[in-house]
Length: 538
Image (cartoon, rainbow, N blue to C red):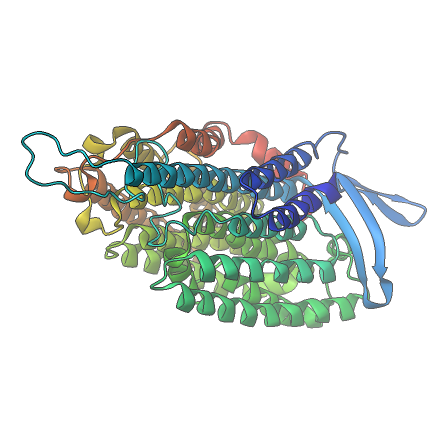
């Protein structure tokens, strides 16, 4: 099942590409994503206790499941996969978002085909002018909003006939396959290869299917930042392998990481590399551009998967390989995280565009994750892991909803929107729910990670009390800018752009429902997830 979890989306990507001219090809991609989700979902079945045992001088157990195949032993490269409570939750989130994005793309492609067919029939039919009419407005664009999934529901892209391309579905599956491999690998060299394999399909999604006005610049910026971070990360990984004599992640973690004299250097290199992907302020400037330019499914994967690669790497890989270095660098990391929370909150208060606002909010949310990790306590690490997963549910939901608003109104400007609660009450209600979850309302998923981040920082005492206060003020800023967004989008008179738009369709509700349910479940019953984290190797 470990191999299938990564192999199924990869095989689906190849199948979609080979059959890209077939009308049903999007559903082949969605089927591959569903099978991959099932493979990940059953991984807890038959798992051990998570305790490591010594048998014949070798460490066994610990991982729930493990598979290892020799590849290039002289290069410390093995196809070694393993899973525990920490990696499984992120692999499951990746598989879920892969399913939702592929279904979203498939439904949008069918709707686009129906729109084009209807336009062809309307064009071939004789024009009938109603009696008493003195002007007509036809022919009407096939990309006009419809009651259902609107054409261009991928985020309101000007070139709405391209975002549903089968190649986009193949790229989504490629991102899912490589990201799943990152979370499940137990070999540092394979980890680096998989980490880099995410870059090319994500770059292609932004560059080929993003907003024509901004996609090339955003894709180039994304590539430059992530490649620079990867070079630093690779240097840190190879120093760790040379120092320990092995690329086995689990073995290095169990033996306490690298030697003391290399610990700070290894952590600094790895932390800088992962900070770009997380992203941590001030290495974040690629993120708002990439989110704003990307199609909706690209923004969903960026927020729900790619950012998790950075935080997962920081917590498990950097913190595990160099725990002493992590302790030494914790104050610097915490200050940067707190500044990121405050800066993101202040910037969001002034941003005029809905997708860019949601994108910038991720900088603040990831600041909470990094601050909790930097605290270094058990409560802090669990708060970081919980907040990381909660962000992966809430922010993709916000991007889906923002994409639906832009597709219907053909604008993301807060000044041009208004009255959504009257024009599309169900859509406005879901947007309000997601915004409240993002600002950390008790009872929803966003609350626990942020609340216990403040607690973990305050628990350290001393100067950390100031960082805890900064994080708490950042949560207040988040409430301010998200409520400002809701006031502009949902309240007031119906804006001209929102007149006559369709409300939530059954297909949209089906795609968004798992994220809504997950947000409620983690908010109301956080205990089982925290228990899973205790079964992880950190």
